[in-house]
Amino acid sequence: MAAPYAEIVADIKRRIAEGRLRPGDRVPSTRQIARDRGVALATAAKALALLAQEGVVVAEPRVGTIVAEPRGGRQAARRPDVSGNEETRERIVRAAIEIADAEGLPELTMRGVADRLGMATMSLYRHVGGKDDLILLMVEAVIDEFPLPAQASDGWRARLETSARLQWAGYRAHPWMAGVTSLTRPLPSASLLRHTEWAMAALAGTRLDATAKMHVHTLVYSYVQGIAANIELERRAQAATGVSADEWMADQEEHLLWITESNDYPAFAGVVAELGGDFDLDLDRLFEFGLGPLLDGLAKVID
Image (cartoon, rainbow, N blue to C red; front, side, top):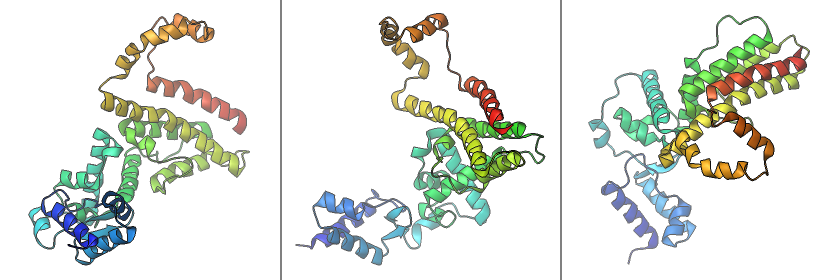
């Protein structure tokens, strides 16, 4: 009877030979193997180490252990790369953006990008370090589609409004962008930093201290991102349920009627009655409705 680690090695090799695991696919982690097969972590680690020694798998930083590209054959059968490193990287980034635009960022995988371009999955790692690096390059490309003007407008308000509108245009064109970066863990993106530099230059010479300047910039950024996040959330909900926002609201009419007639929420019921069922939450209109008052409020602090 074969040792447990040898059985694991044989099983993974068999799955690769049968095509259930392809080059670039992640293989089960040490912890997953130990859990699924009821073996010790050391046994699972020994199996993966042996596979790595034989060149069957390879460890990729921030990705995990993946199936290695066969030596020789398969890659040569793919479309040859004749475009040069920079051009190839641009093609990879563009393909990734197209996938994220059409299907959402959760559906973006390195293998999906490779399949779209007719490349071997492992060959992508010669041009991008992994999915995290690819997403950063995607953000750079999207922001660069909506460049800040070479000549800045006069006055902090016009400059902050210009930045906000360009960010909104980027989110509208690529809704997945709103979920990529957060206030507490900003991406190290040169393109995003240009908006920060634009805001700091706009606020230079005002009476604000450094902390207040950062707060103003962060508030404007989070205002745009906060509304834009709902574009992607709605798309995901519709993809998951097959129900549009209008159809979903129609399904809630009976429940909404019960709420408004309960007398527990008289102010809300009064607004609903005044609307008469005629309210369309248009995010573009909401963005326009709030941007001016937001800048008006900041003017009281800045001026």
